[in-house]
Image (cartoon, rainbow, N blue to C red; front, side, top):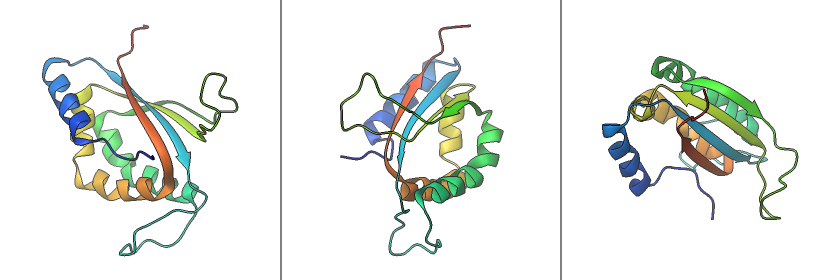
Length: 137
């Protein structure tokens, strides 16, 4: 099973958490990028690779991420997975900091982000998103 979106239960948990917690968060993104992007049949997007679709996502969401206070902390490509199932593969890991959960949720709800998200869905074969509270200063 592949995962692309935050489910309703997880979204509700994030919204509840945001009501009582104003600490900064770091979103850890594990991504497996498709060889060829898979846009829906009604999409007007030009065919492209999964990497190009992810570039479209980054470009389309850059301004709204900036406005939310998001900052890319680190980006890299996994070379080995010493502790993972044998069939698990990720081609990209990105750590993005946000001032708090509410800032992330507000950014996620904007029309600009929603439009850019279509490229993320088309470009990814699978993903994981871990919301973390930094405990090292």
